[in-house]
Image (cartoon, rainbow, N blue to C red; front, side, top):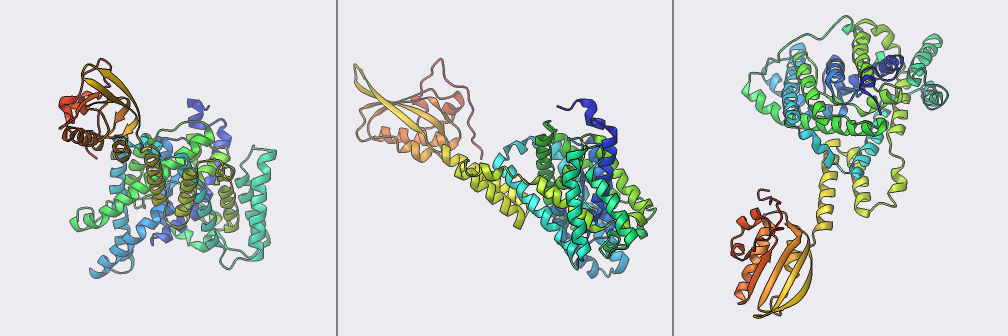
Length: 516
């Protein structure tokens, strides 16, 4: 386990700094690419990686976790960019004014999303990440690994032979060097070594500088600026749905990333604290001209596998990024994209839960279905949709598997004649009402019947109404009924059956869910 001191600087300050530098370099092309997806200037994504990364590094729920502009959030912003662009064009804006207006809508979205995320953290709703079942988590990880790998192919358009050679050599270093030594991160060795070789020998390949003119941002730091549409009611109505989706997607991806890192580090982070930090970070992004974002599983895993398990590594990553952007753009621009592709492909391989292949044949079919479904939905649709689908499928399977109430019956004899006693087992709720009602044989039962719920539990109003319904049927058949071992709240909710409930010393204390 990692002690508190380790959460600040990890086990080695040197490893923390070196790992953070590797992540800083790896963040640049990702931030630029995600800015292009959202149809904004690259600086908007780069500022997000710096601001959000720094805030969550200092106050986040998981030391060493990396946050910034992400593809999941950028995809949500595409629709907003298009809608806001149409509005601004109708107002007569064009050129730099048009670009600035679109950014204003996006930064407004970041502020609203941040407020929503802070509310989620303040209400301590982050704990609901525990409702995500393990098969869904593995499916998310597998799907995300595939998405990370596939997202690199866009950098290989018009790739030269030398680019593929650099990718293979980078992956080889990433695989072999950690087996010999962990004194320096393998990613940093690959970046420095191959950048120098490509520069000296002038190999023909795509460089970071080819993706965007980074020199125009030299010496430029984020500036405080309130979005000019923030007081517009029409802008609020337009932005709010996107802000809600951004907030939820960001929380889901961040908390799932936190869960993955918990498994890697054998420690437990704070989901609620991460929600608060993400919210504060996104509000800050919105006030300094940056797009919203969330945790980045790929870069977080790069950080952890390179030795960056404390807050210092993620602080160095965010600060290192902005220093690269404002001071060393010329050096940053000559880094071959092939090196970063090789690093991300190794991250993809390391992210994939390979053991799920052996487990899938041994786990229940329902769990296997959830794993495969979440993986495919993550790849072809969206992370948030995939996770929500996995939770819903798992919940339905759980409800189906438990949607059965069984009973044991025996007969007793009293002065007034024979008595049949039903003793129930299992939860009585909306899913098990049908099986509960099928347990009775009203026509052939004796004049006196006892329903004993000592080993059962009435979960919701559907269960209460089922007891009322069966009581009414016995009364219509001119038979007497007695009901034992229901909680006081359950008895209070009864209509037909309330008067037939007994009061035992060992009556249960549970409550009934009646508003669903």
